[in-house]
Length: 476
Image 1: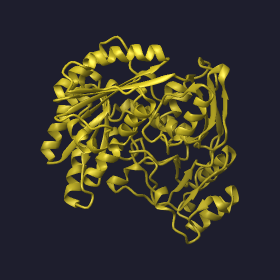
Image 2 (image 1 turned 135 degrees about the vertical axis):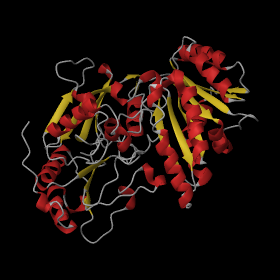
Image 3 (image 1 turned 90 degrees about the vertical axis):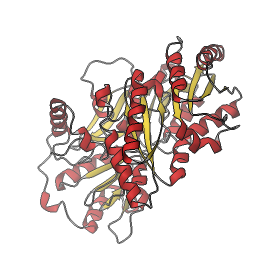
Image 4 (image 1 turned 30 degrees about the vertical axis):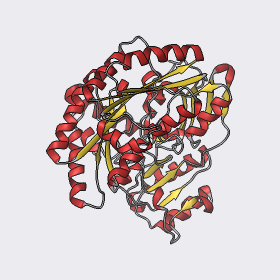
């Protein structure tokens, strides 16, 4: 790996027109936005943290069409000390794709193509700009299955999923994206292209560079392609939703599901405030008095899924107000559409939300929910929680009117206070949303040796310090 030349800091603040001229030489006029007097579309300057009022600024947006162009852009940025902000679908909740003034956004949405699926190997290789849901559909058409299902799959890009190690409901049984990743093509911060791993499932001939790049949030380089292991496509997916009159009954049902001997594909929970916000769109209506819900899924061959579904349903039925277990494909899809829309429904309740994705051991879910309640009471805010119960991952969400400055300040204070909750319970600040800028200050309190090791790795792979500076890793 060659060392990058020292950055020319005197040119780092060149005007946008000069930046545009350089980038146009690399990718063509049609694929550079900004620098010509036009306004960069605001949707390219923010991510899903817009509910917190998070919008950035940039000198330009560049959209390379292949890995060679990505490498050329990164080398150019290194020579000029120009901060680069890699961007996938912009669906993150951590501010990781929000640029600072004086930076350039490197969008990966043109890194597309048909990819390659090898049914005999249960494997696939795709460019980083492929939409996650499109990738899943292509795999299903080949009789194969890519399980990770982040809620933003219809708009997120697979390269962004790798950069954030995205999860979703099915992570409980199948793991997050890292568990499916066998290879990565990337451009590191010094402009060098690297192929880490490949298409085989077992590979220990190098250090775990895949694990290093997966979840790095663009701070070490740009993901340009991915290789994935797959499974045979399941015949059926059978969700089971059980509603309970209070939290304790729901938590007892979760414990029973965890002990039933079957590993559901998903094991979700929704608290009472969440159910109230999303009740209007629930297919068929929720039972009166529902204050907690558990959503599980049995997945696999028809006979196996039905047998496992019965075991899980038996575990969830005691003390339930109602159990909804659709088997018709349309009804199954309707239930999951409702679950995927919970975040939107919660946002609509007040016009905005601030969401944290804390994680604790599953056995401490009761404790973290109680702690979130205390924070809500202390700050005079309304909080709802839902998430991936099997993983101990809750989306603790402050509902807020974004037009009320005082309410927004209280919400920010409450969200910040929540970051102190998981550590004493053996948990972590973020399970799947990432650190970005939202949790960067809290991450600075982690083990100093861990922080120093991370900083040393970044110095090697991004010697000019241009890759998504100020994100994930504490400022130095």
